[in-house]
Length: 242
Image (cartoon, rainbow, N blue to C red; front, top):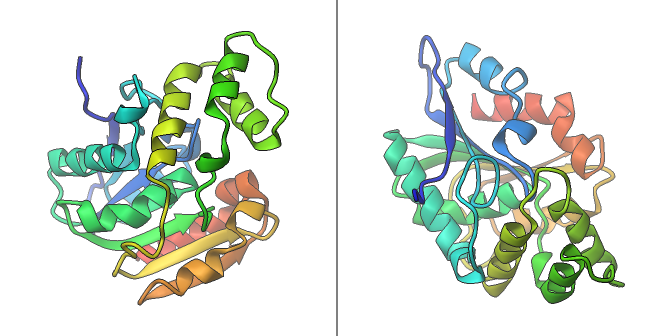
């Protein structure tokens, strides 16, 4: 069985800049977070090829069989391999939520140079470390619903229609083993941090910007989901990568 991540590629008629890699959030997919009509086509019209990645356990990519397969390091290795396999010389990266967290660290390990970053819905702390994975697994298999609010929220995400709960919970467990540490390897490339005005997850983006030698912060309308789907985020991302 292949271990390669699924990538959907949209080619521009006339290339005017690096390819743009789009990395989705947890329990979503490339197609869901980055609809072609809203992202790939406008970027192609602007001369930018797009590479929409499905993370492990998401979309058309292979499932995560164990926590050891879903650590942050393993996921970053798969992302780096996917970009190298795509055959691009340099890329810009747009990530949202979990995708933004991974993009932050991807710059340091990618074999393909990253020119610019747009990071939306990024939390300064590791949310998965507080999830009671054992309780979520038991509930997903028919047990009692977890009393913990965060664990219950994650349970709802992984048990939504079309989701592989066991695979996603293995990813949660793996990511928690290597928690997000923004100070460890901050990206040294120009980065735009975007947070929804009503999104509690991204309220710490100003602090994250302090780790960056070239970081900008933008607030857009909406909560965690609304900021992603709003026109302001898309317009700001395209302009920043121009």
